[in-house]
Length: 467
Image 1: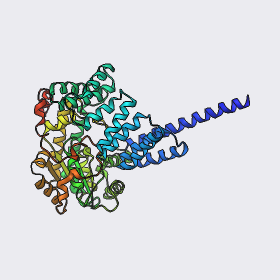
Image 2: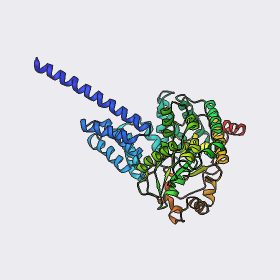
Image 3: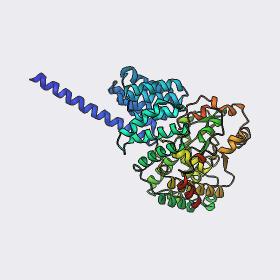
């Protein structure tokens, strides 16, 4: 009886221990989502030390390492799971994703196919496969996805992945009406899960225009940290930013840190510490405060970009909201604005699945209005800090690559390097939806792509005209 009681107590203790460690995994995921991957990694290492065979801890560790840009280490984490639990379909999918980041497409495809063997209804993987290869007539994956699409619940998240996958497939097949149908449906279902109100963003643009005036910049002239190493790439998603980043980081003087959200976090943290909403704390800020924030950003940047790099890029595109703040804390930082034809840009957003939610992306009218707000705010920044933003268009980059690359490097005060014209040979990991395109030489086929979808895009075009 006593032995039975002891065994029961041991089981209860083990359950409590596992629940505690699962809670720590969730805490680590929260830190990672909030842009604190180093803290997340420390927690997960603690969990693995306590329970070495905990699958979730190893998988989450792989995801955090990927977020840190440490793809080889992330790959090891997922391969550990596969070695110990070979039937774990999620691990095979994640392995495929990291291999895709690294440009090892054939190996990635093998991982995706293994994931589907283990889990035939794994919608995410079908979508990943369609993104990795061009779909040709007779490809069986299309019929398989359509069958799955009809079998799952009409509001299921599975339909989102399958819808984007089918949209991509029919786009490849040039069946644009069918592609439009699946893209619209995938976005419609996704939109239902998102809280978004254009009015909030209209108010935010107005607030920033009122706050960041020439007088504010004159008042803080000479403040911040006069460090030239940061390069900020800003703009809209799918504007050509990943291509631009690959071009710049092909230069030996430039390191890429990827997308790191520290600027927004630093601004918000200062507001919390002063008890003031938004950026209202700037009205009473001191030069010492701006310098301190600038130093903190540089400290965090070096974690991702290396200790000795002359220049380090940050490709968090939404930093266009913070350009005024950036100029106050880092007045010597380079700011490069990559822009693209609004119709092509918005079409590319609407037909892409984003891991991180972009709330304005899933309705064409809202997307058009948001694009106009972004354009309006960029015009404001150019007016209040003239000469500090380098603008480059995707179309110009595609038309005269060498001329535009020379202009970019002149802006960064760097000598021309021919490697920048061979950015498709750059072996650095790429984690965006452009992972296939940046592995190929620059091409112009995506210029004017919107014309194939003009019927679908009518709400967008109207919103752009109104804006």
